[in-house]
Image (cartoon, rainbow, N blue to C red; front, side, top):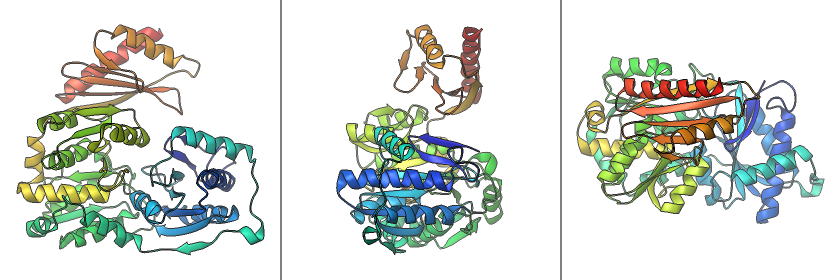
Length: 460
């Protein structure tokens, strides 16, 4: 059993012992602590809650909503929803914050509390530490009976979210309708099965082939939208002669496209393509995290903008985007953040912008992919003994490569002329993650293996 407390929320496996997994006790104490802190800071008792379709969702939702009510909070329960939908709902409801009940791409035995502030953005690391400390201390009172909060349900946010996407200035519904796309969708039997087909219909797409779109939480494959998990989508695209396929994770903030030939467009290139489209019209800057493809930098510079890198984590990307006034940003896992909509990864926004771009290009998805800068990524890790000083190890690697362009804002990233390598220690286990990228798959693997060998020599 596992319980992980990090910048991306409080997540864990369902069942087991308190403090060792995401049990009812852990859910209640951290929900109460979060609610107490935001009520004290804002004077606002209103909260929004929504969840993905995983099988533990109803149980976790009952605990979260009841706990918020027990501290005097008034809850707007969206029911089956998406992460970006809840992010949009929080400011529209003028709420103190929101909680999304989803373990994102993790398998079905996992669930999580993703915590938002009044802007509908993830709380900061410092605020998260406050929640953890108060939750562990249990140093707070619950409300007396006359002060209990209220619960209301609101099923209107599916349409509100879609309407907000359609209203974005660079979403071209007429162009999409005229393109007469045939699209296959794999929503891993979660809430994307509700939201993505509804969006496509609103965009004028008449032919949609739905697979794994029943929101029953019974994931038919590993829910992370990677190539090896999307064979059913590939078969659906090819069997139906679809123009493209769309895959999302259970909470619909990660977006991956499948080309008409049954091959993946590449999760790293979702953001690249959307940026290539938007920067034609709105000149400006872009941001992604340090482990994302160099192709975004190339596309940004092509359109006259500047590219900036942030530490890994959506909170860090959003902070950097605000600092440099980025037109578009996100992460290389298929996460698109478009400030004209809201500061959160949003697959619905990504779908609408990508289809607008594709409709205007008039080419196939594979032809467009071939025209983008070509890079290949290699993802590796080294497992270390718990007592090893990982920070000291990274420091030695930094000294070794001091003559190369490098960044230490998140581990160590070394930028060579044609490749880069990013070394990051895990927050939850004794490993170093090693991401690398090059102009060929062989080059990316070769530089990664070189760095791994050097690390192993230092350890010896």
